[in-house]
Image (cartoon, rainbow, N blue to C red; front, side):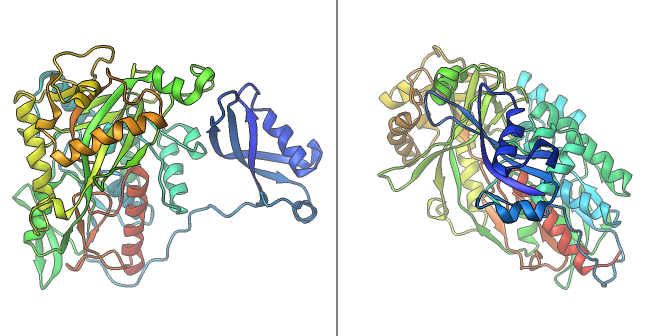
Length: 529
């Protein structure tokens, strides 16, 4: 096929206009065009008086080589081969089936590839299957009663299940296509294969996760829920198995450790077992909420509310005089701020959107980077304790009942506590406690956000509106550790393969899923069935 990029279609035009542009760019008749499909779609709203949909299209035409030879256009070329290539199995024997720990994106896709290649993986998940987990999460949001083993962080699908289901990533890897294809087969919208800022939505993602589970099982894998790996069996620096729930012993020479960024007790366990771990930078801050209509107006101008446009998003950053950068992260259009705690006596926030993104508020993390110099200790797990300290402080400031501390942007900038909300109603459940956020954030984070807000407002009009609400505290933007692994993806403990976001090698659904595939490939290339 031939790939044609930068096809611009006005927002007022029908998609049939794509075909017209194809014929014009390729200088062919409609009879010569056999078929075409959209490879990528994005929106160009940089000019106030016009909005374009911009397409990259793969076209199948007659006499392809002849057409290419007579065109002098660097935006027309042969389409690359995007088909996933399965790796060849190695020749080392396995006595026991591979064990995959965790059912987040990394764990699910590592298990899926192993199952597709005939390795019949055993998957162990500390939390519950998604149907039961969803009920536990909703109970927590309604009543404030937290289940430490079944929550936004732990359970089938991992933390991404209760998010926006964003599939954007900075990595350039052909495995991304396999991830998207598998998600669509499991029930995700077909548009994710070509949309520039694709998302699934937490309402659809829960069903997708369930279907991935069923596929793994159909292919010979097994998934056990409420099966927490509490220890490793190690002999002569080689994995020999795992202990589940402090009791059951399972033999295994291969353990893919696809734990999420909140599996702090597992971090401690593998550290005690001798796994090499290092501190890793992450970020801390708040969730900031605005009216979604304000974001639409700022981004789309006169086209705000157009039926062809989804709720607008944004991505902002500012380098401050403090030497730190404040930036937005995990922006959820038409979504809500959610309680994401996984430990008793601590408050954590995150953002979530359903597929339609039709709630009243837009929210995003507003974060400041922190690193080893801020942790006050060289211990590999010092970042975990840093997170815990501020999460516990937020719990205390919020009233000790999982209500989250919140403050209006205007009051935050004025250095005075808030007493009630105004135009923007906080979406966090159970409730928010209007207060002074400087009580539950490091002072350098407070200073950086205060300096950044007016600057970010110049980039997105209304961002620093007085009535916008900031809710604390967000600490789980990424893992606070990295589990050291070799080029073959193996840790210093033989047979232990760290994978995904919790291990420090990914930052989102797509990159975590891709890393899970890479680790599974490393196992397959070394071991035979």
